[in-house]
Image 1 (cartoon, helix red, strand yellow):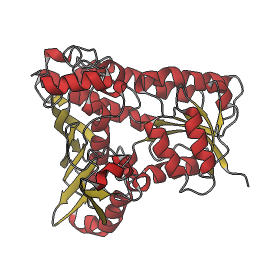
Image 2 (tube, one colour; image 1 turned 135 degrees about the vertical axis):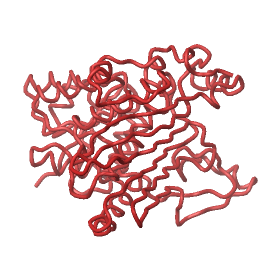
Image 3 (tube, helix red, strand yellow; image 1 turned 60 degrees about the vertical axis):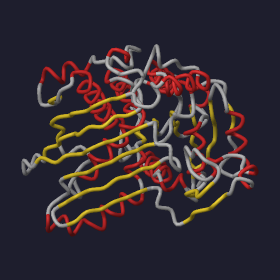
Length: 415
């Protein structure tokens, strides 16, 4: 039986991470890539690491005609156009078993709904990539605590944070292209994993009903003149003109529709975590039990002195978003697996082979987009947003945050 042929649209940072994940999964080839930049480099990596004879294609249509499924790893602002081209390729005869999309599904509810509609029209199974739900640590605690939950009841409070020192590329910092700041970039992860761990074992991922969202967005570090200039010089984005939040926190309240119990997921995200590098910190509290996960608790540490640091070419060989190449460094030996990338691809391919959606599909991605946009709305209004209110749901359908419009200066303090 031949390997499952996967094609990438986009060849940037996340695509490279996902290529590392494919190397750890049997039966999948990275068979093609279409990207404005980095395609040749990604194809070379695939061939060097024996994960497929990756061909560089000039068009999405051509890629779709030569692979079994495609993964959208291109920037947020290009998602709708790319999905349209995929749907057009299918209409013209391309036979695809499914389409994957990296978070967020859309910058707004309108965009996320468009991706859902286009996939449905093309009759394509879908996979929404929210990697933290697939983390082995998160899945293991759910399995370990299942009998405890059956006796004591499910978790009632989840807290999740994702923090690092800031994105790699300029478009991520630009709220008009990315769709916001750190809440759009990473809040989706924290809200999703919070919702997931609070869900009673054995229930669907959307079993708990979102009731309300209360959030705050702030510009704390990158609005200070020194760092604002640094950002302009390095990324070409001027936070004096189009600022985005570098810190966001809030609480989503959910209701168990069978028992009526209210549970809460707290999220915290920042682009100002200047320590070892990316940190995922999650915990959950239930009656008489708890769990905690910290991605920086690695079994491996290395120390590099000042003189030896001159030999270090790239601090990120140790840890994503690492900010130092000397001192005591946390080293994660397999980040692609630690963060859930391996398992999310394996899940998608397994389900696509059966003509089914992945565990997390585009419809789920739409719900996460709604919660993120509700958080922006709450921060703008300075009040809790109640999702059970029909008027709020109607407002969310067409909502576009001030920050994503480039009007963040109206609500964010600039130093």
